[in-house]
Length: 142
Image (cartoon, rainbow, N blue to C red; front, side):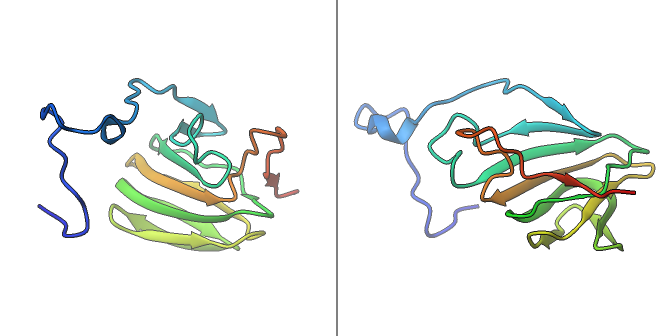
């Protein structure tokens, strides 16, 4: 499928600009945060101070802690599987193709049943400020 606003670049052409190729990184590390298996997509790029983008996976029968980000707006886009995203104590059943937005200071969490769940999480500002080391993550006290 061709999308009109995207420019197709023939990377095999000797005239292709070097900037069109960018940097290709393979096998980015997966980090475990609570029950989330996270690949941080913007870390180490020019975008890392403006936007956080993570590829996230939860195995079946997992429940994350309920938490909030006091500064970050967050968008979750479901890629595969199914689960429940809880936002301010309301359960939202999600599956591939769904998008959910989470405003700053909204408590939220994710749980899965029999299926794993894979999604992209986009945050601005990033949850982790690489320059200062500040993590915008507040667990809900019980």
